[in-house]
Length: 114
Ligand code: AMP
Image (cartoon, rainbow, N blue to C red; front, top):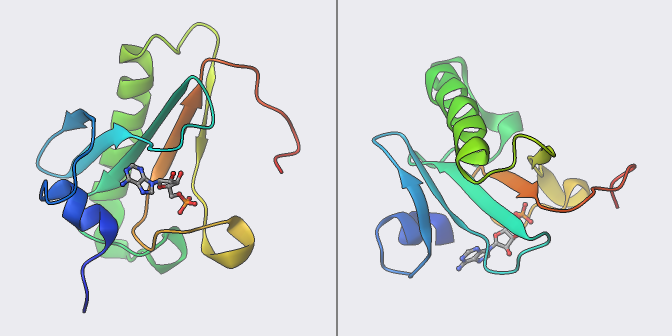
């Protein structure tokens, strides 16, 4: 299977601005930010999307969410708030088939989302 763009970012074959990394997850700044703070948190193992996650992925998904909260706090987003987004499939607006959590903050978010 061909490697995803995000696997190449994890391997540093494609440059990114790294925000956080550990054994299970990798976080980096989105190249087309949709808010003053826009960071992507991804599992190092390439789960395509949340609808294809398996029971065996439970630990990494829990870890990813905990780290998303920690990263948001570390970026100063806790007081005013922020949004976490997982786009899944065509209607969800997913462009990269490697599960990723968008952390968006630094401005008022709209609802419903576009
Ligand atoms: P999604 O539409 O949910 O699949 O989100 C994919 C995100 O990846 C978009 O917000 C893109 O701006 C972002 N993206 C694509 N290529 C890169 C890259 N080379 N470095 C950082 N972010 C990227």
